[in-house]
Image (cartoon, rainbow, N blue to C red; front, side, top):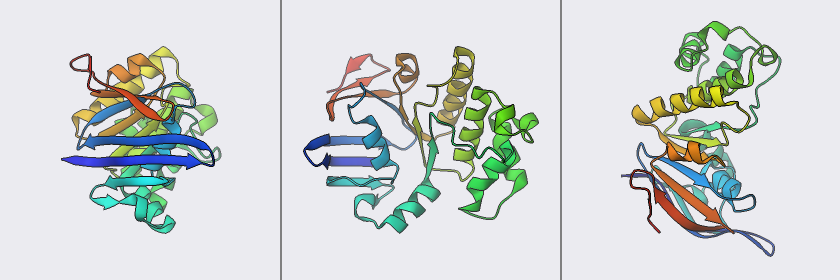
Length: 226
């Protein structure tokens, strides 16, 4: 069963076609990677999937809801309730501790629960750093706080935009291990990446070129699907 379906999606900005006739589905618990050169449409696709933008043409079905037809208010609620967002830039609040940054995400969804937030940090191996400010954390630790923040509301879909882009090799391995664990637990994951090694961890890699899907690679079979 598909959690997400993009049907004939195009996004047009004046004379620029950022996306052209995109058709893609993501199954429940599936992990896919999106790759392509700068300007290929990766960020535009991510914004549409993440309820931060709407397509010019086509429909996006998320958990049975056509989000391309929803109001901005409803999209905010869908993003809050069903999607966990992880960015290359950490976007942590610099005057809040790691624990408080995670709890800030709870504020928009439900009652803040310090115990639950601490458990989220424990999942990413940062329980002992809960009281530290972002400036007291390494880049890898800050990214793990971002992952804990994204997980706090138990999203159906995790969207990660270059989650290892600012990390060294050791911290990249830690973050990938967390993603592997989430995948085993049944989370659906969509990762935008420039790193072939990161993409290889997914089940499928979608290659974008000039706003179009040029190829979909089955990483279990190492062959192009289209």
